Length: 81
Image (cartoon, rainbow, N blue to C red; front, side, top):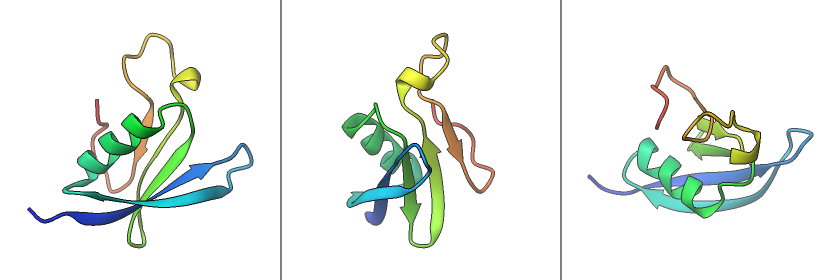
């Protein structure tokens, strides 16, 4: 499967996107894993073209009983654990 280009944005407390960066990934799940590994302590949005793939909140804001970050995905995708 060829790699696709994804955009990653940091999201500030007011919900504004900043610091866009590009990554290459083979799937949405792969792209989410890459972004989680790069920056687990910020809120971010991940886009594939004009489609919002998902939004992730920092571990510090996640429920302490969870073993993962809270991820909200579009298109009725399952949560990535």
